[in-house]
Image (cartoon, rainbow, N blue to C red; front, side, top):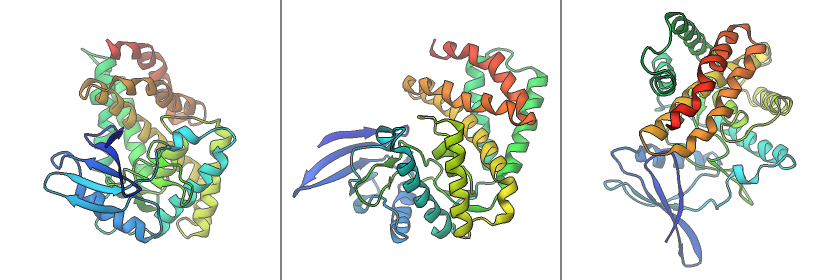
Length: 310
């Protein structure tokens, strides 16, 4: 066996060869990882035609799995200016299948309390790191609380579908057939239709010009209407849903990156903070209600990011 990869969780992976076939052995400690959900969802998603690992053997008590190998090339490694249209087209096609066909029965609801807990990661980890001591001012706290309420309302007013929750370039594998291979789906929920789309197109690990992002996003919208996931009446709200959903995700992700560094000894994730927060500052010019957040980040947070590494 050879080490295959590591991710932001406590899971570890090894690649092994057996009878001419490459397989993946997974060590996923049951006290921290949701292995039952992974096994259940793997069966569900394969049944609707998505390319996810097949479960070949499992020891649930000890958190060991043997699964099929989706290859070694992540989307992150395959994406270029020339390949992006084709690769994102494949990914959006898979996402439409997930949204249109995957059942939501038994999935946790991405409800207001869930969304609020995720937004608290920004406060508890990133803001605590860059603004220690007194922290935010009362006016800043009021601004953030108002924003969080708006972001939660934005998520809940959208059509609710099966949401992967980490549908991005490090969890999608570039495959010769059945592209993309999809990993890390055990935390799926029933939630807003734009969540996975913004995870894909406003990725914390790779960014694209906004014009291309919007072309891909509207391509998803058209397919979603054809598939019955959305209706033509949603067109006027779709872009706002998409952009504000991205604000929620990027605030959460920024907090998680700091937590990975400070709690889990993974400082490599801090290099993704400027891109992740940059998505937020860029929206300040397009949405007046986001201008206070953009100003707060530019004046109070971004200049202090180097302090997180100290």
